Length: 375
Image 1 (spheres, helix red, strand yellow):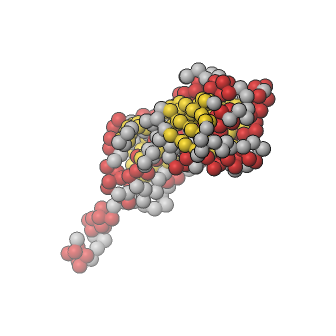
Image 2 (cartoon, one colour; image 1 turned 90 degrees about the horizontal axis):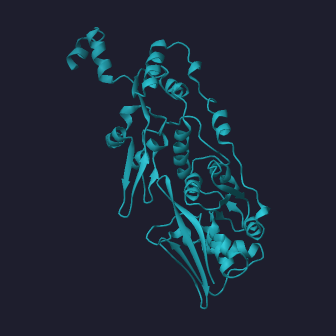
């Protein structure tokens, strides 16, 4: 019996709907086609254990799973749930197989059938709503994030048994309801570090206020302990508040990167990122075999702080040139090119250059005759 369910694959900060076709026919073995990676292929063992735990079975005849479109590589463990439901419907262990195609389902299965959280729930929900699916079924930890898309019914579940029960009786689950504006505005001004806490430093505070008003980049130069990092950390609290559109953009990036907390909704405050000076080029701008957003994209609509600027490798600083000009970064691979947004405010800090301090001391007569000869 042929059954079709739907999942979603995330590329960049956008999602692509993936049709999961399952057919159970005479023969032996389990086949999965459609460019799945190792994590997707391993779903066979997770699904088999989960189904046995709840008293169902994994068919011992020939099972073919096709992930379409077949020319797009599928990664991660989030396809466990749609594949499992397709296998159950194709082997006639559950009814309403036709109803499965009305919903997008994503979730990683534990060996006991528990659903574990996935990355990219927000862009998946946006794509599902745009393509007019009836609803989206996700692990409970991701449902509040996806429920920010008010045009789509989002159902959060803890266990695969709840999903099976839902397709037998759709009233067994209630969609998650989120007041988007209330969630957005109630935490917009709750800052961990506030600019009003800074005492003194009137000149630098005035300079940073001007930079914040115009979105200008700035560099702070001063001796250790002068308060450079302290001031930079508090800069987001005086930046203009995020608009709802900017908050959605920022949340999509953090969702794809897997950096949203469980049961989170929108990121309502401008992000602050402070990478270590040993960071690599790919970690800063993004990249990898399956391109992931880097620090400059995680700082989108916020502040990127480079502490001890001279300690960063020259190559790392050079790769920032194009993203700072175009406000986006393009990562190209053999099969695909992905754009990540990268509109950020750059704040850097450094100690006074040692050669400058040496010259100043020389001009003030602070060195003896031998030191002046060496200078």
